[in-house]
Image 1 (tube, rainbow, N blue to C red):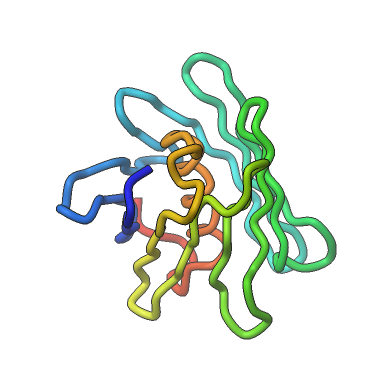
Image 2: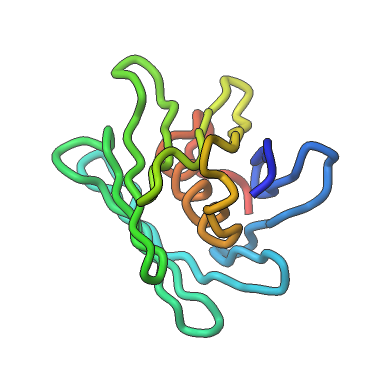
Length: 146
């Protein structure tokens, strides 16, 4: 994954404005791949699931009573997505190697995805799915326009 990506509404763009992914009718379109998204956003439980066109399954759900810590499985890769503070919705994506990306919801409604120490180890498709799940649960604009 690149250094900084930004979700604006239902579009994910890189630093130069190039389109990385877009969401239409609960389907993420990215780099010729399609992920069908199912999510249950709510006050008591959050979970999201996606299936790729080749059958791979991606899941994310809350660990515990709050959405303070999310856990994810993207194919065979496991990720932990804890909030970094009780007072902010910023999260870190941790993989087996360590910190991979930071997810920063902004007051404007945009959500930044910033590469961390092991960003190169995070597959783009995983980064797109995980960051969209964070948009769904943490963005000030709860349901982005499709």
